Image 1: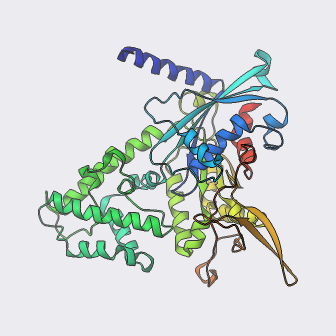
Image 2: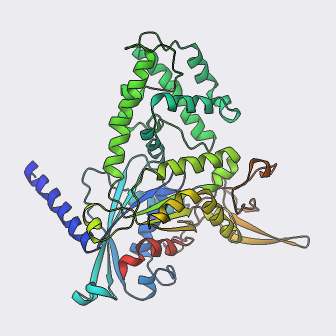
Image 3: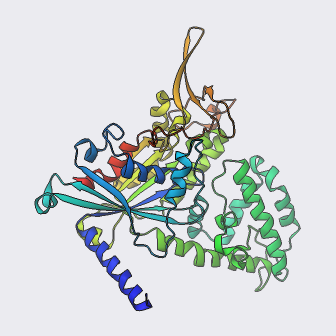
Length: 465
């Protein structure tokens, strides 16, 4: 196909999307969440429920299925030619295996498109044709790249001071000691040396990877030092936090670090934001509250702060037909306390209340802008079962599953979930403990889930009337 033909095809696809938006037949959903929140499993389950498990028994709270108006759903060719396709086949194979495993984590931007055919029950669509089609686009992002978005509102000096202060705290210092020694010996006023900067940046990248592997830390920036992609070895990635000297001259180390920081924002973070964070209709925000609770009071606060910073960069507001056509805003946001089956079902209401407490300010701002917001406890792919045991005269609500990396199934009593944010002095002395489990084996090819039908109804229900 010649270049003019490619451009024409892209133009026609864009024009078709505009028409579909105007008729409210197209919905673009951003699936967001920091590393480890379960984005890949959520998207895989979302697709599986619609394409292979759309029955009343499996999705009783999804209205288009419950009312018998659902016809079928299938994957279609995606419109975003420059974005890699979501590898659904590999992900679903992992989950449907006789010994299921969680699919591999996202390492790049991904997208997938679906066409859902249904019988309309009201409005102009029902009058024009007995059948209608909703086109769904799902976008997935590496959590490591999402955490870079707050850099857009920071300068190098501010970012450096915040990061260095964090590295000197007790919970980070044992990992950051080698890097901090390098910074202590560095004379940032001397002439810049590319080899030295690359060496220290490599040490900083190793530090970020250690923190990711050994702590529930969220704001590990720059994220591309963890997942560099095609930027591996690029000079703009060879920067790190550094204390500002009293004198900064052109060409010195500090000057070069500052320029690389700004170049990273301009050529990596800003295009990522502009190209892939505009024109969404709906958003799913997956939250891993369990890791944050296990990490302790400071980590839970870090999750709250990082989420608020990330959400502040999206475009929220009520859509009308003209705005939907040209300048769509996110008009529905689902906050999902994902992996909710790491605790027993009687704790799910507390989990939702904790999430509401954690996100109160962001949710209030969205509601003020007429955004429809909901919070749910979900598990896109179930990994444990409730089990009640008797201990003396007391009944204990436990979970039963196979911990990751182990062969035997266990009955486990997880910590009770607080229903609101705790002050530091209220934090339990022993902290919170939870286990992560492998997925439950699919029965006859059917993935078990917790409230995916509720999530589908919230995200798509109004588009399928």
